[in-house]
Amino acid sequence: MMEHSGESDDATNSVAKGASSFANMYDTHVDEVYRFVHRRCRDHALAEDITQETFMAAMRRTDDQPEITIGWLLTVARNRLLDVMRRQSRYEGKLRLVGVAQTTGHDTALAERLRVEGALGELSVDYRLVLTLHYIDGLTVPALAEHLNRSVKSIEGLVTRARRELRAKLDERVDGESAEAGGSDG
Image (cartoon, rainbow, N blue to C red; front, side):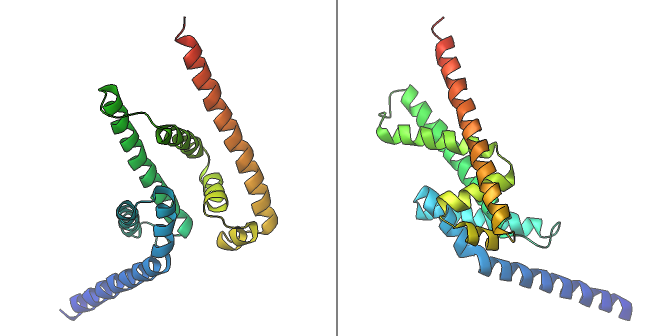
């Protein structure tokens, strides 16, 4: 009977340590994740929802991988925001088909943003992360190096390669759209 009690204490301590670890990770990163999402969507409620979903995913993941990094959290948050934006874009597209919505300059900006986000989505996680943190969040190369635990030279090279790859992906998308537009004439 005593052994069972000891095992129960070990399990309770393990759960308490896991909860404490998650709480520390949450407290450390929640504001940064929220700001990251809010800067992209400019919607307080949506940013809160996506931040909550991101940390729910982290909570589920802590069983598999006890150390959750800020890079992982920001990638999850960005992917969830992209999912929402895609759903919203499809919905607005359906409304336009039935003549409910007006086409505006905002639609063009949204289409361009989705094109860039789509191209970013085709990049490796490292490339996406470094471009997002550098160009959207405004982190300097030295700040990126510190944030990602890498040397400044390594980050400079990574940013250069990531930019080159993004440019190639965007060019592929433009070429693909031109081919589709040209093919519809024939």
